[in-house]
Length: 611
Image 1 (cartoon, rainbow, N blue to C red):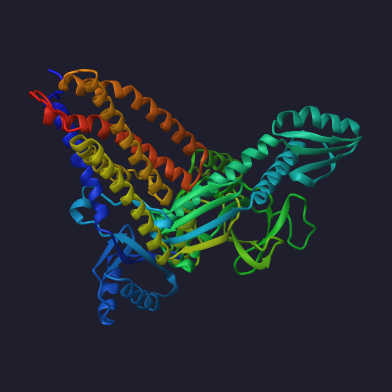
Image 2 (cartoon, helix red, strand yellow):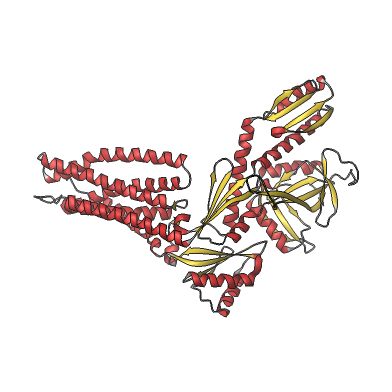
């Protein structure tokens, strides 16, 4: 029997429809003005803090909707912005600078929906407001580290091969310069040493001098690694501080865009992102006195109490290899930081400590701070500050886990642990541009976007109903269902964010859905004019329009994929919503409308179609 669907098809459609409405529902509840309190500099919140904040608000007659403790943060909700600002002033005065007290917007989704993992769509800055940072990664600093590493490796190899040299120094473009005794030594270096360096090429050569340069591919890889690792560190740090809606993405060759939707407190947001610290482990040179002339492989570093120590320039290990860190109390009731290394870091530490038992190893804390000076572009110049926080004798072979003791207090230990746990910046990074998207602009964007979407739907529905009568009404119903399914899927996808271009993508897909129904309805009318029976006209109309609809949607989908791959930011948002809309429009325009038409006309003796 034509124009008839089996029961299982209707059941599948009903299930899809049910879940689409269920996961689109949270978007109707809106958001609450809220404050998020998070520990900073090693201060960790607990449920006792929640009670203290609740009592503080009651004492100052600030009424809150709810106070909740979750994942180490306290979230306080308010019914309006006025109460939110009043509460921030009260809480900030009470807790001081040891906590992040950030203005936020939190979904007002009921608990029963949240328990089903139903949450509203993530909105971009243009629809929700918040803070936009453009951060620049200091790629030259990363390449300087590579240059220093190459210099130390080359010095070590020259010593191992017992090849005497007059000078080994850095040169321009992150290269090296080796001045040897004679031409014979130069040729031996080229043959026995440099042949093993696949990333270094000889840029220039004279009688007894070799000028070396890192090849372009290695520089490109170093640049890529610096950007990607810094993005990972930013993402880890923001996630650990509870800002799960943050958007972090690369822009250009040396820039990273960080967007914090719902956050209006620029000072606190900067504080979250500006801590740039890591560790270095170096061997102490006990054979050289501080006042003696220093060999090329050593330099002076200072402890926190001002004591000078001579350490080797060679870095045994950096914070790049730290994958986890926690704090605890040692047997002397002193704070310590427990460190876990990745596989490569554990292998390096194990091999080094095995060969240097009985020698002293220094832990150097490195932090980049603003110098108060600016470069020619007007950006603040960062200065490197380092100090020895711990010196310990290697008593046995270490592995992937060890501890750092000698830290002054609990707060400092926890702060160090947080920075190490979130990862070490491969290169210094600083904010070069910041923008705050305020509530006025957001309201304007939302009203304009909703108005555009609403008028697009209304005009499409009017056209379809006036032109195709009952078939047009069915198409209009499918259009509304299509809109709900798009919203439901956008709410489900963890990485999807709705922006103004995304709304444009939704409007475009609604137009595509209308086009599909126009094709189907015109095909049915054409079959009727050719003398087909009503049932056969419906069947042939859907069947013959199917190939045209598929071809049109596939070509559109290919364009969307190209936009997503090559585009960035708002272009990706447009591509995501358009791709989702293409899939849902094919479901609703072809299968959805067909199921309703089959229910109305299928298996019945019909003399006239309302089309």
